[in-house]
Length: 95
Image (cartoon, rainbow, N blue to C red; front, side, top):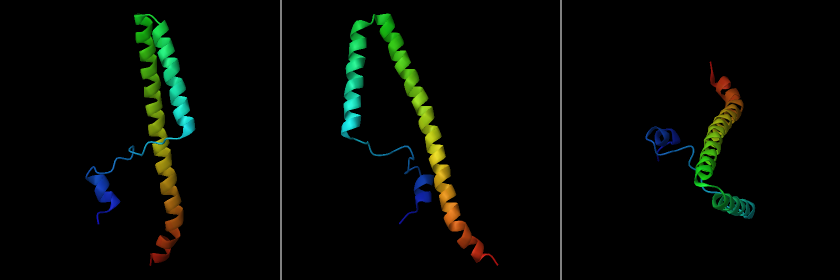
């Protein structure tokens, strides 16, 4: 059995991969967003539509930065928890 570190080294683990979350609230919000997007797309001129799509792209970019920051915080928390749990045992092993 390979270790998680080996899997990570060989590129078989992608920390940002995770199963899609589906629940009624999320599905409802997605439908409302799509409805509003269609409404504005039908009302705006071609130039305004282009700007609207650019705005959407900027929101996605900011969300991506936020996801990276959240991932880093989660890893730090996980490592801190592991250290707090394992450090006493490690210290006891030192001669």
